[in-house]
Picture 1 (cartoon, one colour):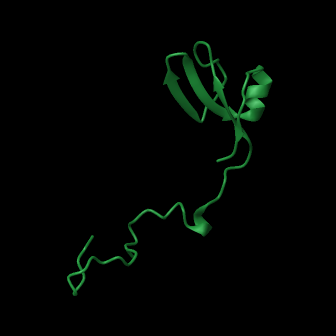
Picture 2 (picture 1 turned 90 degrees about the vertical axis):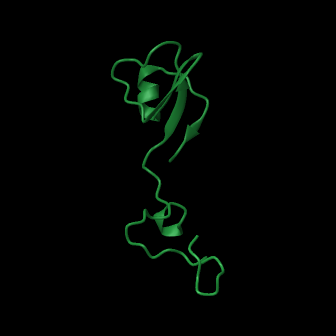
Length: 83
């Protein structure tokens, strides 16, 4: 932190316009539309599936996809979320 004139750390928020917005600010929290699910797949990601997130794990890829896509392909999931 920058030091103020008193020699103490400056704890005031930065007014630097080049800074990224604070994602925790009340006016900055907007969820994307729709519901998303986490699916662990036995092998590779099926053709046509458009994951928003893909994580490579020992048991196979885990993907986050719109719930409608998972339902259309008959994919199993246990967790439904929004982001």
